[in-house]
Image (cartoon, rainbow, N blue to C red; front, side):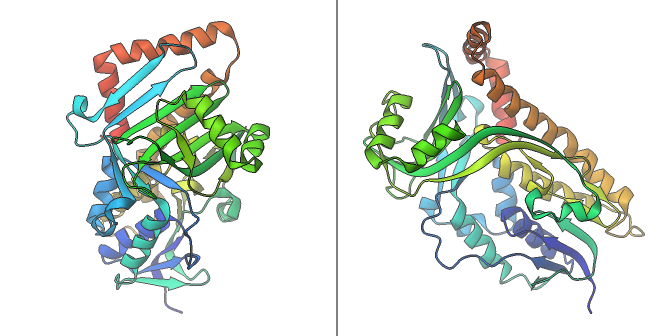
Length: 369
C-alpha cells in the first residue's frame, strides 16, 4: 500500500483547508473525510472569518469562488450589556481596515473547499486510514480519534445550547453586527445577505438548556416575540427565515497537541464558546502554523518528527489558551447574578468603549493581526 506524507482526518473546513494547503506545497496527502450531503439547504450555520482566515482561503483559491451573497463584510459591531448605557462599539473605520470580519455561509464554504480539492492533484480521498508519515487529526473530540494516541481533554460544559437560525429584518443590516449579554444568555446577530440581500442575519443564541429547548420547540410568533424582547427592536422587526438548530456549548482543551507522527488541529485540539466568533479562525490559524512549521523544517527531519511538531504546539498553545480564557471569562462574568459583578461588567463595557488604545488593540486581535 502506498505510504502518504500526511493523512488528514477531518470532514470540516479545517481538515479540507489543511489538505489543500499541504497539497499545494507538493506533499502527498490522503484526506479521510465524510462526503458532503447532496442537499444542505437547511444548514443555517455561519462563520465569522477574520482577515487572517480570509487571506489563507484566498491563497488556497477558495475565497474568490464564494458567491457574493455567501460572504458579507462587517463594518461595525455594537455590544450591549444588561444595564442601560452599557455599550461597546467596534468600527472597521477606526481600525483603518476595510472590515472587521466577513460572515460566511458555512455550507457554501464547505462546498467551495470541496470543489477546490477536486482539482488538487496531490490530494487523494480515502475511505479508511492509510499509512502516512504524519497523521493530522482535525475532527472534534467526540470521534475518539485523538484518544488512540493517549490524548486527554480538560472539558467544562456550560450547560448551554447554541441555538442558530437565519432571520430577516424590517430594516437593512447596514453591515453591522449586534451582540447582547443578557444574564445568563448571549445573543449575536451577524449581518448576512441570505435569504434576503441587505436585510438578513445569521443568529447564534447561547442559552441555558431548558430555555433553549423551549425556543427550539415553540411556534414562530413566540420565537419572534422572544427576539423582540431580547433586542429591544434596535435591529428592526426580526422574522424567522430558517430552521432552528442547536448544539451543546463547552470549553475543551487537549492536554497535548502532538506526539511522534501525529498532531491535533481545530476542534480536535480546542473548543471555545462562540460568543467571540473565533472557533474556525483558531482552526485555520492552526493550519497556517502547521504548514509554516513543516515548510521550514530541516531537510533531515521527517514530517512526523516530534521535535518538529512541538514547534507547532509552541506556536499555538498561547493563542488558543488566551481565547478560551477570554470567552470563558466573559460568559461567566455576564452570567453571574451577583449585583457587584453585574455593576462591574457593565461599567467595564463603558470603560473599554472610552479607552481608544485598548479598544484598538482588541479590534486588532479580532482581525487576526
